Image 1 (cartoon, rainbow, N blue to C red):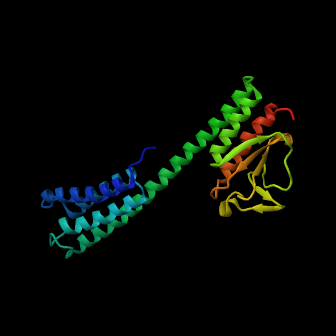
Image 2 (cartoon, rainbow, N blue to C red; image 1 turned 30 degrees about the vertical axis):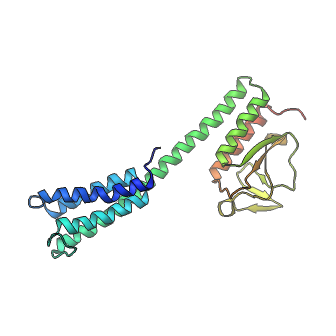
Image 3 (cartoon, one colour; image 1 turned 180 degrees about the horizontal axis):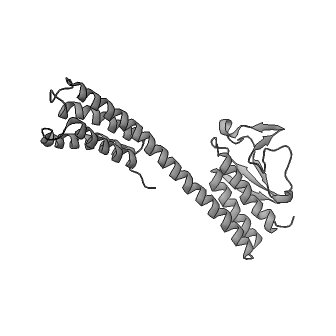
Amino acid sequence: MNRPLRPLALGWAVLLPLAVAAALILLRDVLASTSTALVLVLVVVAVAVRGDRPAGLVAAVVAAAAFDFFLAAPYYTFAIRAASDIEAAVLLFAVGVAVTEVAQWARRELDRAGQREGYLDGVASAARLAGEGARDDDVIDMVRRMIGEVLDLDDCRFSAERPRQDRPQLRGDGGVVWRGREVDVDRDGLPTMDVVELPVRDGAGAFLLTASTRVRRPTLEQRRVAVTLANQVGVTGAVPPR
């Protein structure tokens, strides 16, 4: 998804509410203060949907301040006399913050849905490649690249040797075990001191996962996708002879 650069988004978050509030000066004798506040809420919604959380929060603050300055008597000061105007300004800020959080939640859910679709496409592509009789090396190379992308690794390579018990292992359920202990990947990330082995089905080789330059914390879903991809090699028999 294309998103504006943060400086640009923050610029719009400041300028757009100010511009709209200034334009509403022409209508403040016609529209009630609550109506002008609703118009500014729409501005905050537009910024929150197009920008990120900081931009949405800045827009909410600027919109509330602009309402106070331009549209609430006494005009062109930050003092408010009418209780209804105070209520409108507070609600404008509160609704702006709430809308920003909802917009960010919706964006995260959309991103997750796109990731899940990509994972399914990757698994289907690997299975289709193997089913079409592709060379074993081609299947393994494709799966290797996909695992590296899913887990955001420094390197991923295949070894036809049987997995070693002294190395961390990514199990079939998505958990990581090292030296008999469960690794809390969500908290500590993948082990960085050694490669992590991801065995293919029946233990006929393993993918060696390297995450040494920085801490990677792939989600349980991502780790399970990696396991499913690795199992495509075991299921299809696409394992080079030792």
